[in-house]
Image 1 (cartoon, rainbow, N blue to C red):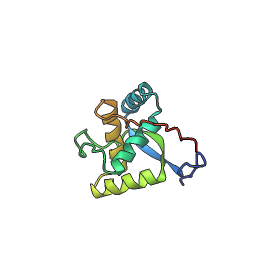
Image 2 (tube, rainbow, N blue to C red):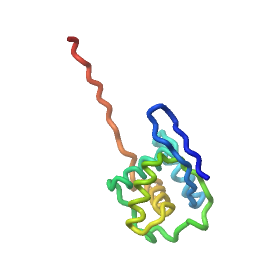
Image 3 (cartoon, rainbow, N blue to C red):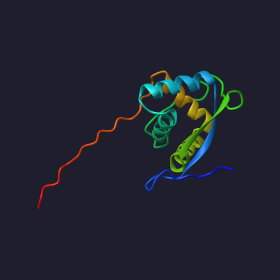
Image 4 (tube, rainbow, N blue to C red):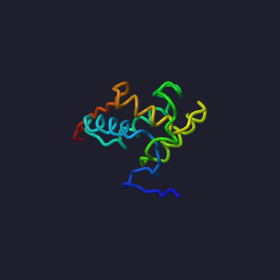
Length: 129
């Protein structure tokens, strides 16, 4: 049974998802995230959102080796439900499992083949009326 949680007044509901990958991949992706100043959960969510929106491609199944769905250690990633659903629709259309998509994202990210999106904030001072 999955539990849902809202993490703030404007946050989307999130659910935990179990992902199987090798421990070395998890640690490698975690180190990369730490070097980017974020947690692995944030990095995977950002890249998964890009994948779900069709803005990010991941290698085809099998190009990174066998699926780790049954062999790797299990780790939990909490993902906004709307991001997971969009990525799941795309994965289904490509005949992929979500585990394989997340593993491919972690592989690409840890190898430096994918970067987190950059956001620039611009503050505009309102003119006094």
